[in-house]
Image (cartoon, rainbow, N blue to C red; front, top):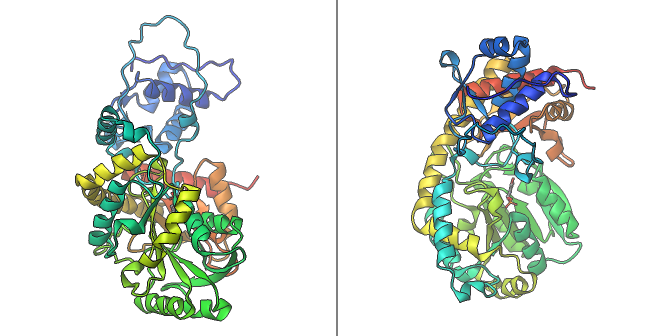
Length: 473
Ligand SMILES: Cc1ncc(COP(=O)(O)O)c(C=O)c1O
């Protein structure tokens, strides 16, 4: 290793942290390249005259963050999935001034983070090429205000995709591009709902949607969920005259169950009978590991009661900030008027790149690759949790989704445990914190999409076990 790593004994930070930071800097500025082998713990400890435990602690942090990849007897290497950086010449004799941490490094994804796709597997080069082509061909018209409903090219691509993959028949004028699922919700609120309107909300359910709707002056009615999804009969008993119902039919968020066909039909019946709206949040339906993806609830909507919400956050990347909404034909005019006033669509350039990505077949290929990758990564984590926790955690494997629910014994306080894990830098969430009124048991929610190997999964599971067993401070 051509890198000067010796930590400074006179600095305030513990030696293992200094070593960790130096290794991390060496990887970030290219002095250590992806795939390059790092010295064994023993060799580095002896070279730097440090205790082995000190070097081990630094390596463990780097493995947990995905910088290093342990390969058993083959040694530990810099993760080959990291982007290549230009190698440093290493000839500078000037002391390196530490630059302020960039916004990006401050916001790096933590292990187990929920709701993120595999950031290492996104075809960045291809995306940049598509983007560069658009920038090179920028015409005067591209500098003008774009269509407030969203780029026609993207809306047309989505119509083709939704028809084939989600069983939804619609026209481009029914599609509204927005910057996120929550921005789609706000558009729905502006077009169809009044302040104080009652709205069924899955309990447990996606807390960010809950916050957005409460912030938009709607009255949320928690409705319990079981292994068939939203309990529609309970919703009717609680608030038959609600104006809308928010549901995640493909993979209930966070339990992962699918809304059963009888419940889908019952929900559509209720909406038709009471002239209410169903908001279908189809956030990660493309990821199903057993059989083909289920058709969307919208595909059964013969009376124009379903507002279909999709997002590119899980299937491309969340930094794109691009989502979409499909509205019934009879509502297009109202939505168009609101879209003009409130301007929810994101930048036209991102929309144009996304449209090309769909039209040129990259999207279908990317989804296919991600389905295989996620099935593998999910398996890494499920097996590692089983190996490390045994009967203490029961992983509930659902047919799809991009996180795991690991159930704890009812006597365990999942909020306290998740807080300990978070304190140790692990982005685990407590199931019970997604519930409002109806108890849903004790469990941990764990994202698996960025766990690249069985070794990394095992290492993270051990880190989690250690964090959970620490006494609360
Ligand atoms: C249940 C659910 N719906 C929708 C979304 C998508 O939200 P956005 O479009 O803001 O990324 C998420 C993101 O995590 C989610 O968990």
